Image (cartoon, rainbow over all chains, first blue to last red):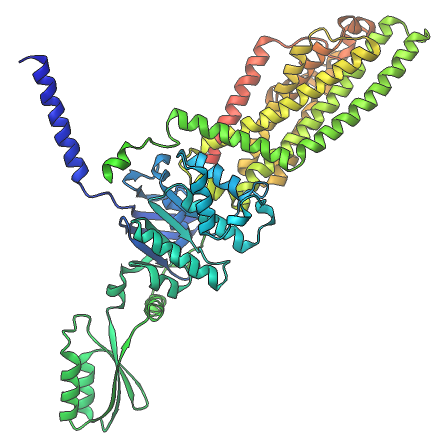
Length: 338
Length: 301
């Protein structure tokens, strides 16, 4: 066999392998498993695992001190986990290069007050190791509404403007994953709408977003998936339809006897307020549950005045999960948020 | 998508990425010093000190001219005065860098400025090295320039030129580097204010210990003399300062002042530095710097 033929075979094998690798699905934007962190005696994070798929917008919800910011800081290598593993965009997070395409807006957003807005962006572009043209940086400032303040020192910025600058910093280095920790805490209602539009635009471009926010409505509008943290643990996680899948039915009924009450209870959890009854419908409802219930109630002599569908909001679901968690016996002490 | 991502260079992690991070952060630190008017304040102080010393040295020259002092006495006085003024500069550099290192490192981690920066694809050790390099350039640059200007003033007024000006200025710069390395280590562990106070406090303590040791040597009391020797090993600022003084002063000045007895005098130095001590000081900087890098890398932000 001549060396030319050998080389050709090796070359074709390599091409085949490269083709196979290219055909593999991209690694998730975030993959975290078994994260733990304690500060002194307090467990801030206990066994948290989560994933953010490429192009997904994932909301991180939970009460103060649930460990949301600690989890985010562990993902970004700002806090060392006591245990657990993190992969960012397919690389282990212990390698700084894993953060090359990650944008981050911290909850505590402060930027060098002696630099101008465009100098701050320039600094982050240099540190990211990418070559982002000046025009693109200007566009980034324009996107967050700071186009006319590019040459002003950050020291003179209001809190809201600094948070807008932080958003520009998170977006400037062509990120494939953006982590936003309370991105609207200092913004007015208009600014909140801007952030929502920016997140939706990122999603449209296939950029993964991990969003930590207290504003549940905001999360509900933009997120594909939600992870609810409580006392350092994942209390619930899933897509919005999985979490909110439980629908409810409100009925105005009179003349209920025991058999009719039993029929209602057979559907799901029942809450009564006067003549109004709220029944939780099963998640696997095949659209027959409501008509069947109404006809059965009528057959049992119940007078049906009104039947209204009701959908659980994310807020109600979150409160339900958190209350159920705090009612559980032997729960852990509250974690601290860092 | 995957192939495209894999083809990109591993930003920030390779040797070129690390060098870029170090230089970017060093330049940022220098820019901070200039934008925060530290540079301006130091320049104003230096000009003031230069003007005062010009007046003082010109009075000394006038006394020589009218025969009140012999040439030898003038050289001795010029040596002592030069060392005294240089001590002033090294004190300004020590205070300046120690109080700059605190805010620039501990202050940034406390305020949250470091969060966004350290979430970039950079190693914390490279970030710390960049800060250190910027501070060294600032502090060492200051003492060398101000010291050189002072030497020129002395030459113009009393016609005295130190025997080894380059070595002397180099040692002053080294002394500043030692102190700010300590300040960097402290600022990874304690608050900005505390790190500055402790660094300057230790600097002053070592200097006093050095003087005490000198008194012990001149009296022939070995246990008192050991105080200076031990403190010079623990924090090499005073040892390097004595080496710098030796390079600034006129060799005949010691003989005039009374030979080895002049060890008790804080602004004259009897012996030049040994190569071994210089190596120890370099090892000290590497050790303390390494310790700072480890502490900073393990810090939760």
